Image (cartoon, rainbow, N blue to C red; front, side):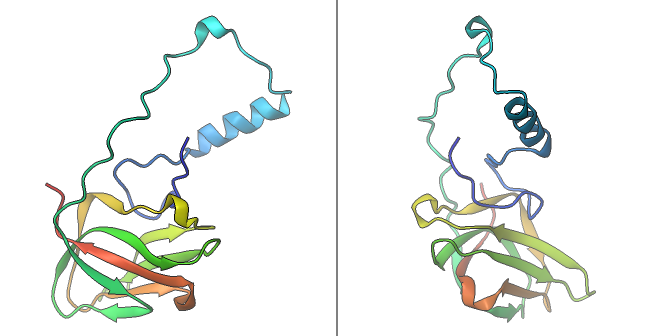
Length: 150
């Protein structure tokens, strides 16, 4: 399984390959049980890992280093790590004008060799006055990908 990078629960992304909590518990129980090998006849077919990843949308890109406050509405198609160091962890959140918090992306123990854009399953509409923030600010820069996937 290729590393996904984003922490589950911070945004609903297309192609999310992160393990669910149930899958993690199943693996932990298997390991605690001595990791017995199963019946090879019951193995599922080998998946095709050569599938082409979804093409990036034609989107405008805005670099975010620290924070910004939106002056106009926008639709966020995704987020791409731009300048993030190996091993860094960062969160990107949006604080809406009503004070509610919208988690956008959480990268934990980031690895540049596995860097890719994280596209939302649906475009995320953010209204004027929304404050978008990278925390901690010294962890790096991300690119906000604007527009909608077609």
